[in-house]
Length: 294
Image (cartoon, rainbow, N blue to C red; front, side):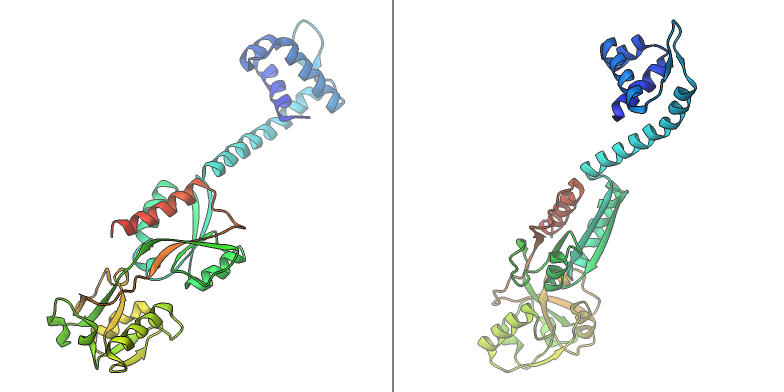
């Protein structure tokens, strides 16, 4: 028993005869007759009284009323499947690293849900390697992050390369300068992320080449907190320009002339879990556009 056969039966009942149903459905009348007979065979009951006037049998009336709900549910399901295919409903699970998670993504997401109000977006804020692990387990659909450790199943594509800047307190003498070189930073106290942070490792390698060990250091594990320690003139911070897009009062962002480190931001996807919905693809484009406008 096919849905289209039930739909044909309803058309015959609603239009009152086979000919009008055939015209409406753009079928020949013999096709309509064949489908009704096929439906009766499938059900094992008679649906119509045979005669000049089209009339439902008792079983036909019962089937008509019960199957109406079936067709309504089918139409709703068919509509939802089409919306899923088009990406206008459903869910997106995104892994995302700081500072993008706090400084870029909220505005992007706000614009996105205005266009796709029926899509549920779950955001998991993690570092690149954790995002990679979650992607491998199927816990997220894709991630926006720095470059993680290489995994065979995951694919990373950088779409933006950040640059590093210096953040100082306005009470630090360096605040008088419009730009600095690394030599200017001798004897400063640097506020660093943990020792296993790839950017921190590159910064320290560069510092040691330029000024040896002529600097102090302390760890503040969350990079988003660095600006508040700098504000109190506890130390200085070298971090990405994106992380310092919204500096706080009593601090100053200063370009560094001789540091050639450009941390990537990219999309992390999996061969196992393809990003296929139109909405997910559009969200990725909106994230990329937000960096191009920076």
